[in-house]
Length: 120
Image (tube, one colour):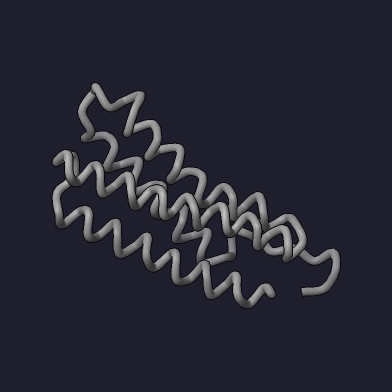
């Protein structure tokens, strides 16, 4: 990428998928128990929102800096998956829903790592 040119995050498939994941998570959290509102629910929500947000923020920067923001986004995706394991263990989400979310998050991770490798 030439100096001064930036990515339009809205056109990036990784951002689109990350936004879809964040919206899916928001829908799932509606069914969590009330006592988790300020604990696991809050953590999962912030984590899922962090994924597309870091892609958007990093897209306005140089490729080297963008790669750092992609690292943060990837880290949030791994954190989210861990939190979903906890939610599934506590029976807040069933195995089928967990598998669907896990597959989508792992797809995001593969796509993001491939995109990141092309930045270098």
